[in-house]
Amino acid sequence: MRPAAERESIEQEVRRKVEAASQVSIQCACSVLRAERSSCHYKGKRRPQAVLMKRIKEIAETRVRYGGRRIRVQSRREGWRVNTKRVLRLCREIALQLRNRMACPRGVIQFQC
Image (cartoon, rainbow, N blue to C red; front, side, top):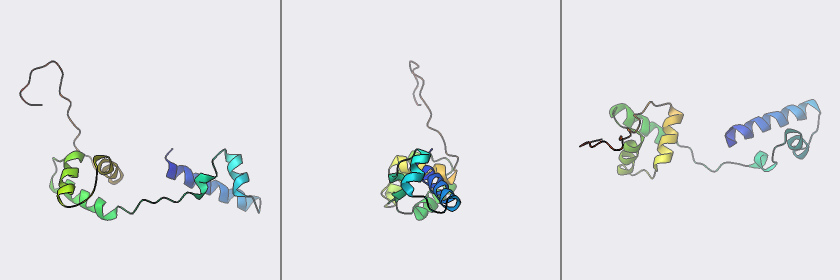
């Protein structure tokens, strides 16, 4: 389970327990759920990626044959500070169906992979 999803489930469970038992501390609720208290207090620092996601989607629509790595190169040329992992993560969130990287067969002499 991803940390954000785990946090949400813990918060929902804590709210449910608080409503049911009138007053239950976070410490008590987290001990019942066997979860760390720090996960209830954590606030993510990630900035919203809506503009970048929109641009990635535009690149993918105009350049149908581009994969995640090539989209990263194009984004970099436009001035975005992104790496391959972020581009691939955002593509998964947008649910883009990109081209997969083709593996070259080993031991076979080919002019181009």
